[in-house]
Length: 215
Image (cartoon, rainbow, N blue to C red; front, top):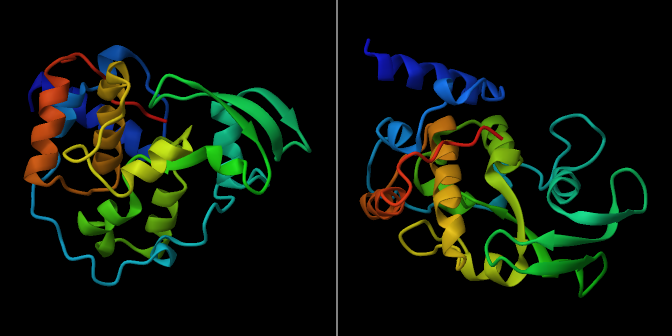
């Protein structure tokens, strides 16, 4: 096994285990990990429903707070709490647009900030998640690696698009965005479509030293 193969294997073992990166020496670049992900055609959407990915926003980490609130807590600043889980208001430094978005919990206001599945659930289903167990799909849908709080309008605009059909308007975030998609697909054994991989490779060519995130 080559030096590069050893590095990638070690880093992917840490990634799959959910462990933090030890050092940049053990962290693979996106280019390294792209080479480990299969390329296939998009599978049919037959059988896909949101319920195939378990109950929405479960408390999968056992901290008594649901995943949506965990991500809001991670990504918002200037937070005002109702209790230790529920955030009443805050500000999102939106990674997709670069704007500061005010979040106020309530009917008609909460949607200003939404939680994006960086690899959309429908996209995941059509690129291998249909083969996973319901437990694995539930973990996928609630994995912080695959979740970002973002401007609601942009989340709706994205839909279930992949890198070939939608990218964040903030160009300086695109490398980090596709790096997260690559990390998620590698972690869950999903595949790329050819256009998706081509789009990711084109972006990563502008940032060849970009590392994959671990959380």
